[in-house]
Image (tube, rainbow, N blue to C red; front, side, top):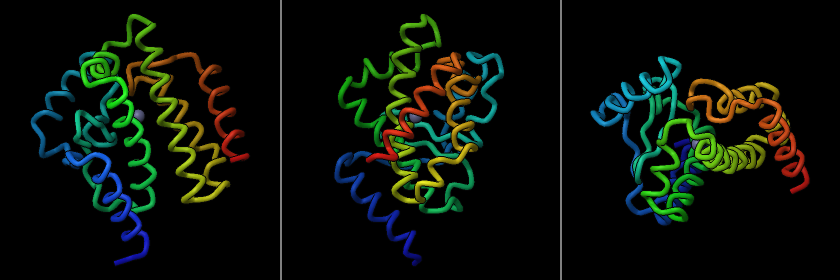
Length: 182
Ligand SMILES: [Zn+2]
């Protein structure tokens, strides 16, 4: 087993110690994920077409993963899991019902979309921190990573969660410079 793979395994053990019911399910094997896929296509007017093939989604204690999950670099899986762990902790903090309401609610009214955006900001800050710790400063500063994360907020993938690009970019750049000093 590679060193990276054993790092992933020990991270997973750490996560299961904190969240004993945590499990990983492949989207293509889940009826629930398929139903959610149809709902998202309707809600986003077809804007979210990659739910099944590209996105990781946490609902309850389950992480739904796209096909090809087994081939993803173990370090990238840890980075992704650290983002998702933030959502699991948020759910504990806000309770399941509050979280589901906040998270699965349509992008309107704006106040709810803002609450959802704040939760994603917190989780993406952890993505950046994990990227720095596991892949280095240069990886964290990557313009491609910046584009990818900013577009998560402003694009259709999450129902145009927070379409004000300048605000998201400002948040992003502040998070990066704070992490550079950590
Ligand atoms: Zn997230």
